[in-house]
Amino acid sequence: MFDRWLQSPVFYSFTRSRLAQFAALIALLMIGGALFAPSLAPLNPFDLASLDLNDSLLPPSWMEQGQGKYLLGTDDQGRDVLSTILYGSRISLLVGFSSVILAMFLGVGLGLVSGFVGGRLDAVIMRIADVQLSFPAILIALLIDGVARVIFADQGHGEQMAILVLIGSISLANWVSYARTVRGSTLVEKNKEYVQAARVIGVPSIAIMLKHVLPNVTGPVLVIATINIATAIITEATLSFLGVGVPPTSPSLGTMINNGNNFLYSGEWWLVVFPGLALVLLCMSVNLLGDWLRDALNPKLQ
Image: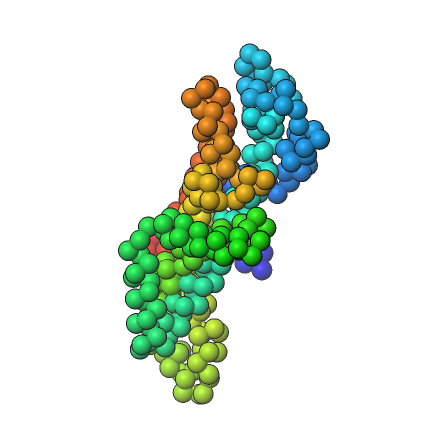
């Protein structure tokens, strides 16, 4: 299988694109730093015993009053900014990847059924999608997040369910693009000869959808999913910046930017700049990979 990948047009396109290789390197460094944060981070920002308020709001190490063990400075609680970025990236990536997988599962399933079955079911699913498209995704996510938080808060599980609620709200706000894309591709595929032949020999409709139609409509889905990872991470950061994202006890990049914004005008610029730069690099690299994958999978550009 690995040999087939090395001989595929996609891998050949990757070896020819310096921009894609640069984006992949940045993405791997960011993801690797997040995954191995406990080993790479100079300090554990969640170890309360190691925090010292006397070290709060220290500037980066190369500035006056900076300390060598705090390369990017500290926040108002004395936490190392570099370590907090590494740990915070884990939550941002967890929310981003999980919400994309859930949205893809929901959107692909609904789009496949809508395009293959048609009729009233198709009309209902697409009208729901049209209504949702009339609102910005961030407003949909805010609405779902707010309602879910009220429900779980009444049951006493608000803090524990915060990340799951965030993943669910972002995925429910982004399933439409998958559904519409898969529906359009399914409408084309279901009228082709191999589908008609499967029907003639008595293959069940569910088997035709899963074994024959689905593998032929996943190309555009992979491109959308790659690009939507960056969108989901930005949405999570936006919700956290607004104070309705992950709890302060589990800070993400958006939470760090929100916290640093309170000290921006007093001169502690590093609390916003470095988490913001990490967010920009992560989303930019994923977007560039998505653009490359879109071109690599387009037969007209081969």
